[in-house]
Length: 158
Image (cartoon, rainbow, N blue to C red; front, top):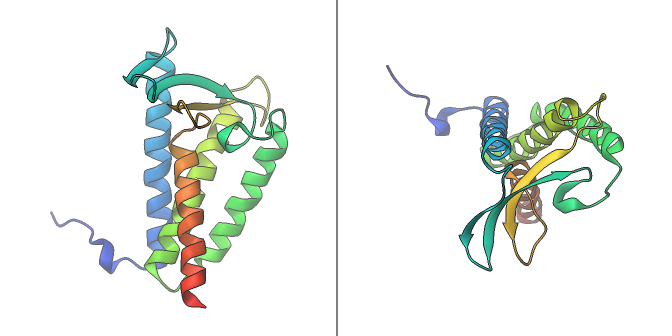
């Protein structure tokens, strides 16, 4: 059986593929965190890095606490916009950047839908905790990396 070569994928196929990988990894890590860290954190590097279960009602990096439903609606709008943008992507780098953002947005949106008592009011599971930085998750990382890559690509194209 032959594998899929990334360098032969069109941007239209690469973006959803990247998004699917981000969603799968994000949800798998969150499932592990909820199961394994309910009794307390796992210290990886004392005084620097630990995995700690945090349920975040706000946006990435614990911003906008209490605006979960509004954030969920913004994530839905962003996902729709990205899907529309992918149709016009010309390069795989652009597609990868948008795939990262799309996957991260959907990963956190899944938490908003399924980790709360009502529609769109769930809390996002965060767990990567550097002592000097707000706690975050795989989806937050994907959004940040994808957005940074998109900005760098836009600057480069100018």
